[in-house]
Amino acid sequence: MYYDTPLINKLNDNEFNYIKMISKKEAKHLLTKMRKDNRMFSLEFLKKDGTKRVMLARFNVTKGLTGKGAKYNAEDYNLMTVYDMNKSAYRSVPLDRLLWLRTKGKRYYVGA
Image 1: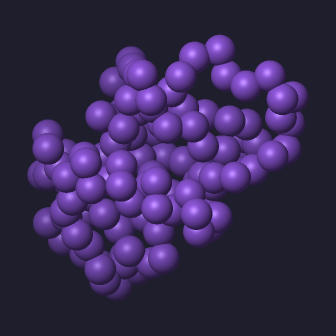
Image 2: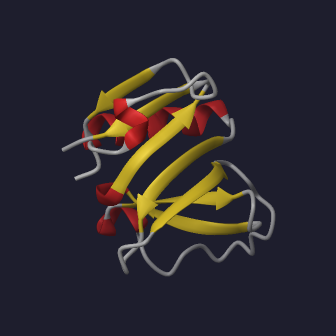
C-alpha cells in the first residue's frame, strides 16, 4: 500500500524526526481530538479517482457558513469535514483513504 514510500524508509534532515504508524481508528480519534485544539494540520489522502491530495486544514472555521448545514451526514460516508486553508473552502476528507496526517511537529502514517 503506502508503506514502501521513501519517506518511511529514509528520512533526511529536513523531515520531521518523529514518525509513528497508527491505525485508521486511531487516526479518526486523533482528528476528533484535534477538533478541540483548533490548530492547523496537514494531511494526505487518496481521492476517488486515485490521485493523492495534500491539504493544509483546520477545524472550527465559521467563514462562509450560511446556517443551512450540509445536505448529508458526513459520518454516514466515513468522511470528516475540514476547512482547506489553501483553497479557502470546506472539504470532506475520506477517513478510510487517509495516508498520513501531521500535527504539532509529528507525522502519523495511517495503516490498516
